[in-house]
Amino acid sequence: MKRETFHAHPLIGYQIAPGGYLAVDLFFVLSGSIIAHAYEQRLREGVSVLDFFNLRLIRFLPFYLVGTCIGAALGVILIITGSTSAMSWSEFGLALGFAVFLLPTFAMGRVTDDMFPLNVPAWSLFYELIVNIAYAVLLRWLTTAVLIIGMMVSGAFLTNGVLSHAGVDFGPAFADATFALARTIYPFSAGLLIYRFRSSVPVNQFLLVLAATLIFFLPIDGRTRAVFDLLFVLFFAPMSVFVLLNAGRLNAPTRSSFSFLGRMSYGLYAVHYPLIWLLRGVLEKLKFNPLPWGIALIVVLMVLCAISEKRFDRPLRSTLTRRFVGGPSLKK
Image 1 (cartoon, rainbow, N blue to C red):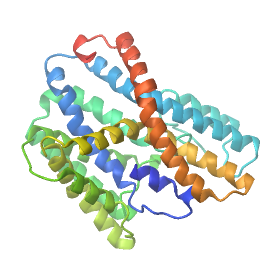
Image 2 (cartoon, rainbow, N blue to C red):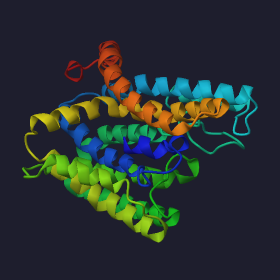
Image 3 (spheres, rainbow, N blue to C red):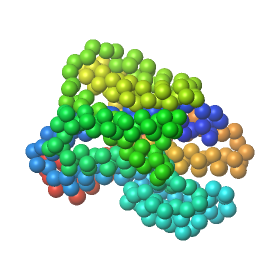
Image 4 (cartoon, rainbow, N blue to C red):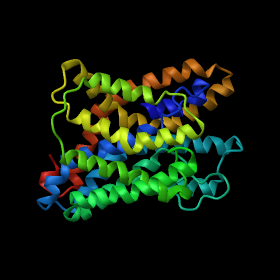
């Protein structure tokens, strides 16, 4: 949600969540813990890497492809209208051909260096998938000591990237591939360790989430931004996830709120970016004020994505899992 608010500035008119991109790093930590909880034991018991890969790909694809289709529609409109930000038809075809398979466009040309020009935030899904598969392949050797060493090495690369970019808002471009991979490995490894060292921590979950949310809206810039981002990624994000995941049983209102956020979050992330720019272009042509429409878009998308997760995404993933995943223990 914070990332979507961060990207919504073309509609809202100003940046209300300067640190919204940090939600990606929080997601990577959560992902490590959730993947370990859901699959680590089954992978150790002999579930194949291919089945695991298929399941992870199935998890990403439905909403991702919807977002890519919206991005493709926007790309066609930009080309037809002669926009200065439009790709050529050959570049568009190349981008779409790679994107269908959740692969980055390896040669774009003059318009953009983005790995996924039709749906820019998909870069994080690509790196997430790489790290997920590496985890499955290397699991037997991922002792606590190895994970700590991996965090130290990736943390060093990540620190270099944050300081050189004056913040951690990098990843979509090919030029940042090394730093982006480190940005994925460090928090994902932290999430794995958090799961292994889970315990009971008494805390008010709502207040913790509120505190984490407010961080994204702090107006920090300059050199302070780099230091702040570094502290968040290296320490605060892992600490927050550790406390939250080990906070014990949730009360009913908190559980319901988290359930709604969980249902809508991935769909919102996967489709929001091209929709925002598509709506921005339409509103400019109609000379409408984009602010109320931008707010309405985010609210409507949250509801639609929560409904779609239950009515569209989940049933489709179940069907694909039955068709393409061989291991019965992964069909659960």
